[in-house]
Amino acid sequence: MFLLPKLPYSYDALEPYIDAKTMELHHSKHHQAYVDKLNLAIEGTEWANKTITEVLQNLSSLPEDKRTVVQNNGGGHYNHSLFWELMAPGAGGEPSGELKDRIVAAFSSFEEFKKQFTDAGVARFGSGWAWLIKDENGARIISTPNQDSPIMEGITPLLGLDVWEHAYYLKYQNRRPEYIENWWNVVNWSAVSKRL
Ligand code: MN3
Image (cartoon, rainbow, N blue to C red):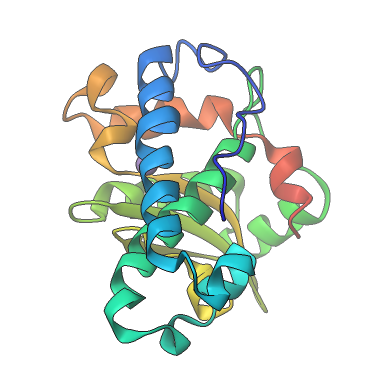
């Protein structure tokens, strides 16, 4: 059985960049719904006692009638649990150490990385996520539709950005680029670094 994780800060902690009402609905309604639907789907199966990573890396072993619902809602649970951890009040700025080295090696500068990551989030048609993942050249940007997650391909994401409308519509309406521009102010780079 999976549980909604407690946020590591209050709903209003990411103001003015992410508003309190959006955080409250996003965590207590959207994320809770992913958890509830995931639990309902795997209740009474061997998968109820696995970790979310084990479940998502073995989707093809799940009963066929449960696979899509677990992919969507298990992905939602994993992605949001990570998303909350990678933001913090008073964060933002730039990464340091190995993470910075990897970003500069891959994108030539932090500014160029920010631009390309922002573009990946803006360009994702409909609902989905932009990700930074580790690779042999340092790091790479990808995006996924719906609640698909790099973890489903065995890749542990370093950074993830939710670009579903529910993540920004109350404050930014249709202005996804403005949401992303503001989101950089709450990225917790030390938490991202720990994922290396
Ligand atoms: Mn979301």
